[in-house]
Image (cartoon, rainbow over all chains, first blue to last red; front, side, top):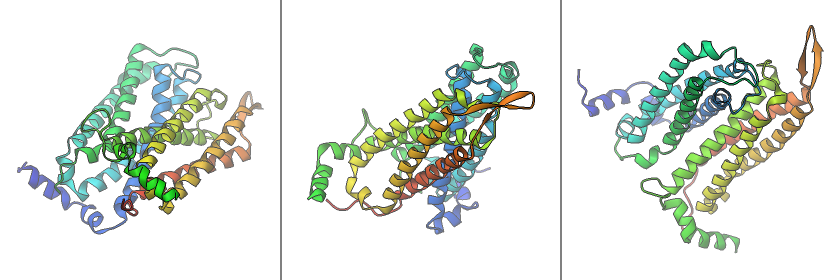
Length: 167
Length: 174
């Protein structure tokens, strides 16, 4: 297999919807608007879930907070689809951008963190009611989650700072 | 005269620092750092606004609206962060924003979203528990649902208009 960055980028460039985005005047702005809608859904629900688990917002039960999780999943799917649209439009400029690479790594870590919480922590905290304290381990999972998503958002906005300039 | 004042202001050190300078250290440009804070504020105020609206529409019944004061506080802090960073971003290129129609669409949508959010907040404070079968539920009046729907729509328009501003005309020459 050829792992030469230029070869990889060239292959991604031909994937759908890359050529369509490059020819269209409105697909990229449309994708950006969708990306922002997705991030509001994702972070809006993560604020409720993570802050409850961290103990900042104890007036509701953990189960009630976790019921907002589907919005995070919908938001993430919207962002994944719109992100793919951006990436295939100019893959080389993303692959050589350190902020983008770090953003992808942090999304991966956030995913592992979410999986770890679901497998190990959720069964222990799901029955915690209003005004009850969550365990320290749940607070750590939630704190890391909120920090990661906010940093991922910042990195997304900082992509132009780290753009190298080729396509 | 006001236009001349804006042009002189844009040529000044402060406005130039926002457009072209660095925030604390290189390579973090002031403009993109402010945009980052602007996005965090947006995620808080719009995201929490949408989640509360979902509750008002009748989803997540176990989530008691009478207990959402701290959450609403966080949404308002998100808005203050948005307001502060937004004013600074505006000071970086006021002439360009003022001649862009979408900027005014965004401003109008934000004002309408804030007014409806205040109405929703007042409505949440007045929610009463009513008997329902063996227990009690929070009774949500139709007017509150309509206002929650408007909050969602106005923030949606503000987000889309805000994103599209970047695809309009470049700043006018100095």
